[in-house]
Length: 299
Image (cartoon, rainbow, N blue to C red; front, side, top):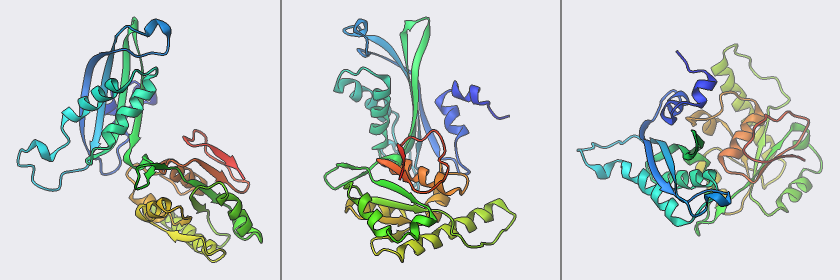
């Protein structure tokens, strides 16, 4: 029996992690009902008075490929979760649970084995109820960083076919590059017939490959449009301030928590969120899914 959206919204993070797992779910470790006292809150009446916070944390971890040999140094220890909480509470006084949750998640994701983390924090002393926030963050969503550890937030740009073929394409790219950010260009399906399989999984692959053909069409229009397929290639280009055209098949099909369909603008939005982009810029009269975690603007 599957959980309803309402049941899942109030379920423990462990249940939410299980419900959102892919076909090959990861191993998980969890911290339940960890209560600490802290001075936190945006209201004046909360200042100078410690209140109880309850933490529930679930971490999806990379499977251990070598024998454990019952050695704690070969796993992500539970202590690392409580240490992350203690360290962030000790760093400075915060107003918002949201800020605390983000910082705890970021610290946990800095652990090599951590792949995705669910963090729920609740205030227990506000009233006869618990008030809280819950977030989920993935290693894939952490922004690319330069060698000096400065985060880089690229600009993801969706180009429709009329823009790809526009006589002033190079001038438009110049305008985008004038913002001083690395560009990741995404394209849609070409205006050409493509095979129809009548089978969703195979049709998805056909559509993704058709987008990659369109990416190569764009590459032929401007020498700055270099086609790349892997996260490593994208990260390498971004660190050097270079622009690339995204060939989506590999990243989309390999992603555990990736998009389910092949609608081009939805894929571009997923990429923008995955890369912690500054914004998604959309060319053409196309629909953009609601609920984006990055700003979306029309060209």
